[in-house]
Image (cartoon, rainbow, N blue to C red; front, side, top):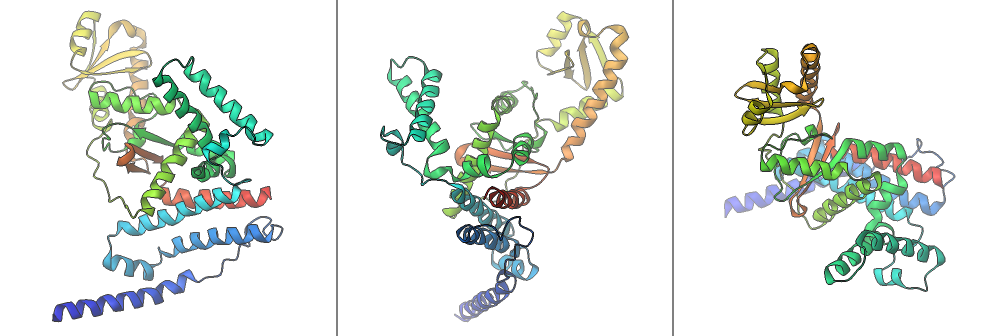
Length: 382
């Protein structure tokens, strides 16, 4: 009983002290002096953006030493990061809603033929795209595919869930959009493997030596086949799902990365090249060894790595080109190995069998940058 009373007293003091400490950094006045056209914006837009700016400020306040001290006293350390991410994701949702020109329509209302000319035109174009992708609808399977395709087009422009898509396609500038589609990708697989350093899996990765590597390669190829708009849509849907998870109080704990797609084998190949453990074999011997070795292709040269030796199909490399080819391979291997230290973050969503891979910076930092640019763009457009 004494321990319980002591614990309750401590918990009470923690809460009281935390509230008083939280007030210090949170209750700062937002003075948007650095925002363009702020004084020219309508009062209604200013009020809406104030909500966003206050929430960004609240997120930043969680990094204050006094505030984080109290949060960490009774929570896991990673929960501050999760809370910051949630607050910033809510800002993206609010900005997307601010940008809406019209209230969102239900799917049935969108299909109504009495809609405005603009809505009918968008709907007819969307249905035409869906029909062209499916072809003649002569069975239930094709009919379901057609309905799914039409509904996907509706969600892009009209659904309640499209605040995030509006943010990424209509609010942020083209420079930011290009950065996102170039420096991020969504790895999707079933089952979802916890690959380490997915930032290393760049366009052109083609490791097919195992079922796992083949799935990873196919996941990257799927992303590379998407156009800019489709990539932005997938990123927006991923972040929206993450936001909804937080709304349900589902916080992802840190994940142990137990697989590495490339680093070890490239280090071994680099050592083989530096020690000149390279053999040039005939077609028959190359195929025989390649049956159970680590196959890859570099500059149209077929290679197999096996038992610490690099085996090259001699028909692909002429004698006079061997030194030059080995030099290029060595330089390429160095960039491959150096990329192991690339900064970034991978966020896994197991319910969707997806992971968002970010190069360069972590998600919190990027969200702050995107929100800042989005607010400025909204003011510029007004």
